[in-house]
Amino acid sequence: MKKLLLAFAISFALLFSFSGLASARDMTGHFGVGVDAPIMGYRGVAGTYYFNKWFGLQGLLGIDVSSWTRDEAPKTKVTATDWYLGLRGIVPFQIHEDVNLGAFVGLNFHGISLNSSVSGSSISSSQTVFDFSLDLGLRPEWFVTSNFSIHLQVGVMILVRADDDNDDGDLVRVNFFSMGDLLGTAGFTYYF
Image (cartoon, rainbow, N blue to C red; front, side):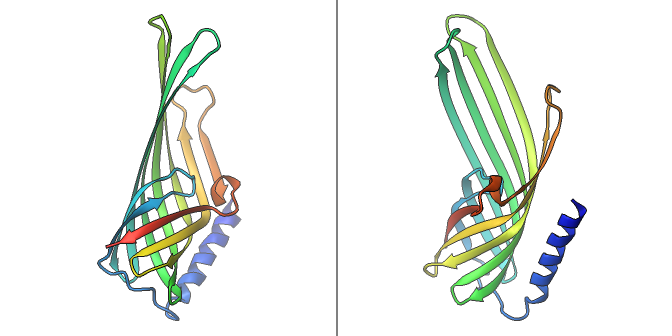
C-alpha cells in the first residue's frame, strides 16, 4: 500500500514539474454546471468554478430514491434513499489547444437509507449506512466549444465505511478506475 501511494505521489509530482511547459486553457472566473461522478461511481449534478488559471473547485450532489416490492412471503415494500456529496480541487494543465489535463483530489460523503415494511402489518425496519472516500486522479477535459466540455476520469479511490450495527465490521477499500472499469467515469460541463 505504501509503494502504491508513493508511486501515485511521484506521478503527481512529475505532472506538476512540467506545468511551466503549457498553461491550461484559461477558465478564470467561469462557473460551470454539469453531470459528474467521483471515482466510486455515484452520478450527480456538479458545479465547477475556476478561481484562476491554475485552480478550480467543484461541488457535487447526487440523490437517488427507488422503491420496489418483494413478492415472496411476507410481501415487503422497500424504499432506498441514496445520497452523495463531494468536493474536489482541480489543477488543470493544457495538453492541446482544446484539451486540459486536470489533476484532482476529492473528498466524498455517501449515505444510503433502506426502509422496509411488511404489507398488512405494522412490522417495519430501517437501516442507514454512511461512508466517505478520498479520490486522487487525472481528468482529461475536451472543450467541444468554448462553453461546453466533456471529460473522463481515472484514478484511485480510498473508501472508508463504518458499520453501525457491527454485523460485518468496518470496511476500508482501495479502488482503481471506478469499480474495476478501465474507463473510469465520465461527465460533461457547460460553462457560463
